[in-house]
Image (cartoon, rainbow, N blue to C red):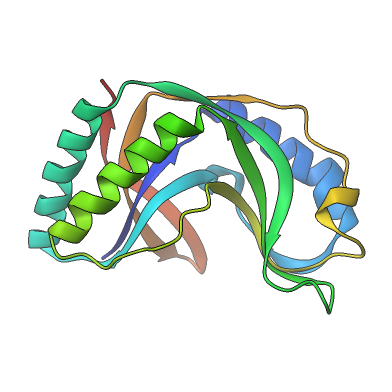
Length: 181
């Protein structure tokens, strides 16, 4: 099964992001594969294919990580892109996060270091974001877009998530949720 470690967003925050995407972002873009509102999250570490032994190791790692960090708050930020916009196409269109980035960086570093020590692949870069779409064409730059009214993201837990295809749609399911602090 394909898994990753994430911060799940509260339903109210997902709804506000979805409303912003529907009213502001999508009309300013063309094409693309848009993320379902139920799938909005912030990835802390992508694991990929994992077997039962890997899953057991990840449960231990996340239990320890959750104990090592208290809850904190982030805030939604402006839209950004990954990929070269020379042809107007963004490989990934995302929503930035701001707020207590020190706590986020600590949690991410803890998870990364423990995961690598357990034999999982190193991820050198971490750019916290909420993916909105992939392969989108933008007429201008993300900075031209009206900004979303900032929404607070209460980070109270971390989740081990499964990524799977069901009826041709990508869905993310929490396998386990660990409360911080």
